[in-house]
Image (cartoon, rainbow, N blue to C red; front, top):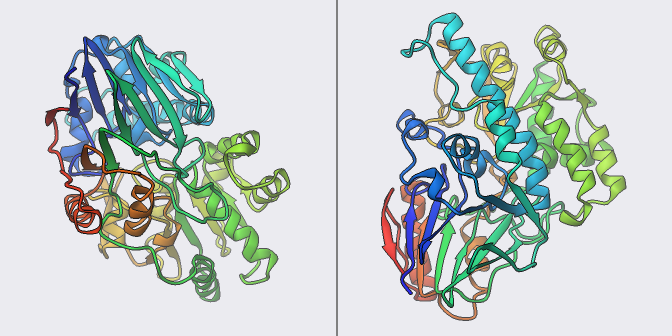
Length: 453
């Protein structure tokens, strides 16, 4: 039986993960993410989906991050009525992420119309909260390692990927063949998340390569975090941490909890200024089986920060001159409350903007980490005088060596290997590394490429 695999996203980029499997009249979409970063990528979100949304039988979701789930409301708006299969924690996190994404889409369109920085008359949201609610009604949660039927004749199984809460790698079985999607592979030996678990065999493997060309090895993350906070506090500044609301924010709180207990950082107030991250904290405590923290550690982690839930509380942080630590979404400074804080704290050299992981090309985060002297926010440019650092050790993505370690779990070479979800240099470097380390041929597919397995 012929199986066609199409790469509708995450080829030559780390965003927009979308892979379509077709066999015997069935269409299974693995991940349904938003494109982020460069304008040319973001414009893909507005283009018609490459196949009729109503013709897709099911979606299988690896995890909740928007570059993997954020297009679902748009897919449903345009006719998709099938089930969305995922793990239980992914379902709970998506309820927060998709509704928030829809709200931000609505607010961005409203702001663009109010202030006139749009070429569209009027500017419209990519989708709204009604679309997000409709998509959430189609979610079906499954336990890890449970075999289920994604669609008639298509078997499926989730295995822990260790990336964020609920993150999974996916095994699909159809026509006697096995196709594995790595999803985003997490780090090994972390204090908070379980190790990623590989599958043992595959006729085809689609593997991510976010950090396929580099290693995270280096200084201890708590040493670097303590140094950054202490130096900024000593000069009377504020540490602003743009952070992903799911996963990264909670890792940061964990490390801050340990540093405070050990007396290694000044006793600065910590503010978690992200409604999503605040709500996600409750989900972490409700899914103790999906991470390494105890219930007591979860409660202690949540107690480290003051939660700023309202917009007024968030705005008040920018009028308080005292040194502090603000953790605010989004992690690549593409939207959310962190943009207002950036406008306030970027011009002052006493402050530090501390990023915590990968910054996709074309994002404000990438511009700032690369040393840009100004960034555009809400239609106007803002000078960068604050110090900017990036703690790559905090990334929730496996590095090159950890990706190889995950691949080492296969008992035999996958029939075909497709390297995706990475910038072109990273994906091609990891393709070569696979061939050199294991002797397994690998490919880097192009956007919209279709292959027959």
